[in-house]
Image (spheres, helix red, strand yellow):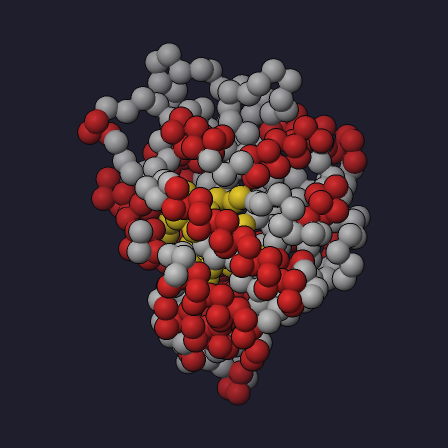
Length: 406
């Protein structure tokens, strides 16, 4: 797959409610993108529904009235808190980039079919690791971000040696950032899975020497998936080190699905990324990864790429799987024991309730998906979630601290 091909899939923006003059709101962005290109992927930017409106927390006195062109059901900045209302917040899927680290990145960025002002704001915030980010965190009450390299990342690199060198460079850069702000940042490692043996060595270095809390990888390894035999040593090392792998969508698809022809809005975050990443996670289950490595785990963003809501269906069809292809347990077992779910990009209390009910409150972690989603909206969604304080604290920070060893 050429690295400079035209890419339809892009990550949704996450703009704060209070915008500089002339900055597009979410709905204006959708309209402008559709009018400008007719083919941009703006999935995840769904207009507000009555259910979302019902979930909204009322505006605090003196709070800015929400922009009527944005989605209903979302607050602006979180309200001013009294000391007893202070809740620690750890966000676990927060992107950064290193300018020039990935040779193919600029070509991929140029082909993103979104308005230039939106792209430039993303890139400005991705490339800034401290100033804009820390100000955003402080403004919205986010105590810690777990940083991970954005897509496109090393997964787009064809040459294994180049991938190894770039992964080390990115991990060293992130380690210096975390060391400079140890109470505000933690890190997920980047791995050069094009060379599984080198990836094991880099994983060991990243965790034991650099202090990273796990790995984030963007879906496929140039068309290969992590259930394949060559990646078993990586899973063995993940299990040995006791760290998780966050399985994230990739902006570069492994292949093109005919069902998406003529409907590029389906390719990316609105549906395609969920379908492909969720299917990848199911490959890990049905491929026996968690039978061989029962203490290994993955994190899935976007409310578990919708797999928690499919558990009953997956289990009901398990008896129809030929015996030679069955794993040791029904699929829901692995979703409740080897998978963690994060909230990134899905600010719906109905979805949160469903995920918690399906996998348990101790397996759901808060995330924003900065800078592609709004910290103000994500924190407002979290604070207004209909949970008892202890359960809300688990989602907000407790589970991340326990699972990631923060």
